[in-house]
Amino acid sequence: MKYPPKHHQDNDINHMIEVIKTYPLATVISVKDNQPLITHLPLVYEKDQLIGHIDIYNPQAELLKNNNDVTILFSGPECYISPSIYRTTQLPTWNYIKVHLKGKVKGIESKTALKQSLITMTEFLEAPDHKYVLEPDNPRLDRNLNYIEMFEIEITHWEGKFKLSQDKNPKDMRAARAELVRANQESIKQFLDKVFLIKKQPK
Image (cartoon, rainbow, N blue to C red; front, side, top):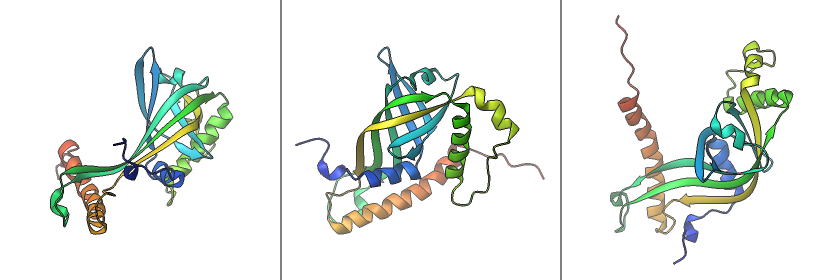
């Protein structure tokens, strides 16, 4: 049996782009001296490229330039699928959506390009309501330009892993989809209630 199973692979680049645009926080992986360096950064997709910014004091910053190799992971929704949701007899599993990319990265030295890129990324992340606008004359923006490096990644390899119970019958597939929606909506609140407790202020 070939791995990964073909029915869990999605080679449609448009589907992968939708994952990138909807869940732009990427896991960026570089390797130095056989050791991985990993940073989580939002990346913006533009014409087969990914645009990002990194703190100059991050040890990985030096590797995000000079045509170095880089691996990028994007994660969509995921959840445990209980056999109880199916109409047929099945075993427990985990459904998920992931995009694995490889590419060549180069640093962009221009402070003008960096500034515009930060403004563009903010516009993208603020969509569709745009309640905040990063203005070009923002003094805080200008003060921080010397501490941020911009980079571009040319994507050389795409791989979409969409494990969504595609090997089940249509009714079970629909049940798995509904469970993915339900579980993600509920689990976020339950998780935050456990790890991010907000103390009540005295009246």
